[in-house]
Image (cartoon, rainbow, N blue to C red):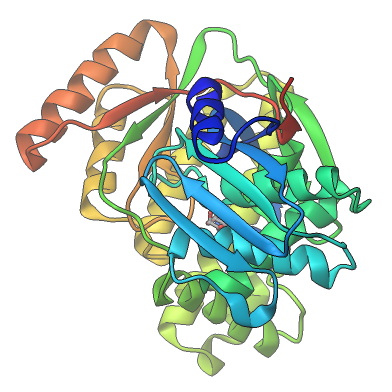
Length: 376
Ligand code: GLA
């Protein structure tokens, strides 16, 4: 990617670009908990976005999206929002940096990515983090890493229509090779957990059912949680118990009840998984992953037929843990599988999925990698 991005930059804009990169992410467990003030357990991956950037001394941005073969030019004022949806991510980052006092000017950029789009691996966070990190570096804005993550999140909220939590941008900016990160999304405390489960692999099985968070379903889930939190008199659902939820059951809709039930259960599962990891108890980790899957499918209703099928195939093959990963509505499952079962599971997932849906899922081995950085 580095070569193709630099090569294209030279062709379009000439010499002198600096390269920046940010990764996509996986999440072991803790889904739809971030905007509820709960815990998440992500890690950055070896797939992401690479951008070549050089300041151009004007007040315009000229950007080229290598994978789409499209370019966009826009100014830095609120009314300059570009027409291309991919360019809105870059524009949003520019605006959010400025809102935080960052004095930025125009620049030229070429970027490319290898995070599969719509797979639930946060390609958009990788794009936002790349530009937030790069602008902070190139214009010496002095913004700290948490604020860089918040810039990406605010870009989603204010320029892309997704009221996401902080997990994806946090993971992309803070990622560390070989480590998962547990983040408390209320206090923003985090810890790195070296993750090298001896005898197991983490693998993603991508249904290639397109996942699209822009639009209402994701935001609707968040709204349900906020309604219930309000009835409970809390800022977040985090910390609520099932007893408290049952006590207000008559005051909320049946659907909101189920949404909240999932979130309360998920908070417990993340903490269980942390304990289990410390003891090397991967069986418990795997059990909780399946519980998350079915909670997301039945209570939170963010799964789909294809992903339920993949989780069932995993279970039938004896895979330790399997669940839908990310926001949902398509994308991939994350699977914790014993080394000796790996080949069999992958073969079965491909064969059975293909027989039922007419195409093979895509397989990605997880390599836990570093976060946002300037490349040499
Ligand atoms: C998307 C959002 C995140 C998070 C996950 C679900 O990836 O961007 O903030 O809510 O969904 O865990």
